[in-house]
Amino acid sequence: MLKEIALNWVEKDGLEAMDHIIESLDNSLTRSLISTAVLRKAARTDPSTALDYAMTLQYDPFHETKYAVVDEWAESDPQSAFDSISSMEPTGRKGILMDRLVQTWGSYHPYELFEVLESLPNEFVSKAVYWVMSVLASGHVEDATKIVTAIEDDSLKISATQRVVQLWSISDTEAALDWVLNEPGLESQRSRLLTYLLVRYVEDDAGRAMDLALEQPLEVGEFGPEVWVVAQLASISGNLDTVLEYLPKVRDGVSKTEAYRFVGLELVHRHQTDKAMNLVQQIPEEGKSRYLSQIFGSWAVSRPIELLESLDQLPSSDYASLAALALLQSDPQGEFLSSNQIETVKTFLTEEDAKRLDE
Image 1 (tube, rainbow, N blue to C red):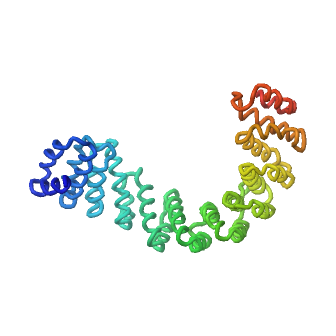
Image 2 (cartoon, one colour):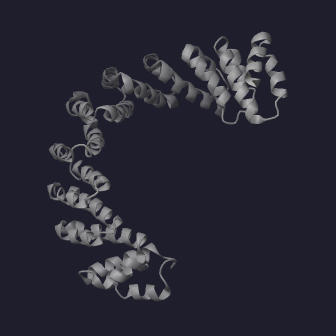
Image 3 (cartoon, helix red, strand yellow):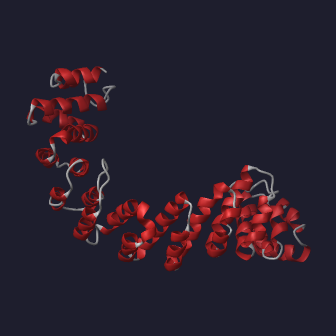
């Protein structure tokens, strides 16, 4: 009722009536709701005056009233809104309003916003591209892909392409995957995009995701996208025995080490530490120490007493020493282990690991 009265009053006497309306309201939430409704309506006919008035409000801490005015203005005439906000004194509020303008402009007029990217302040260009791609990739994906491939700035092209792939893959992962694999203009970022898509694809067809990952070339020292396929499969699979069947397919080197590490950590998380330990035998020699350090580190943090009680059951004294080191490093203040338990753990340390603990 108060809102209707305020709307009618301002329609009759203009925004001058707002001062009287505000003074008559004691509740700050009521003032905010009513002023937002009134100024939103005023912005449809005189957005400049409405925004000027909104900027004088002292009880708009979350800028909702100002946002309402900017939204109305950006929907009807975004360029004029941009010109007006650009002319404001450089303050934090100016940046907040410009950010909102870019968001609304991109939502209602994505093509027009893309055409004027060069006129935007540098700090808002990437946000503008984000909102343009968010809209186009959700309903006009063919236009989105054409625009993306035409972007010359490398950093903008990367962020724009990632946004298109993120949204497109939700509605049609297969089509997005086909585009990433075959579009010549995506060669420099194909590996990154493909990794994202393959992770999404795992739930639908893990076998094909793995095959596609293994087809991708590797740069020296990097690990292949099959690592992320295995990691995703491990995180969503109810039966990790299925995941273990994929591990031997992972390419040798750092890829294999990383894949086993992800699966091992998931096994520890699920209290299947025996299986995590059994995997050590399948890991290349150069990766065993890092794998065990990670496994024991996770085990020590999540279930320290269990690991303590398992020290004398580990396959070798070297393994027991690494586990003891992980326990002591994860609990330097003795919050989980008693002083007697700590002394017991120290008896499992090799001389080399004891030195590492003191470093």
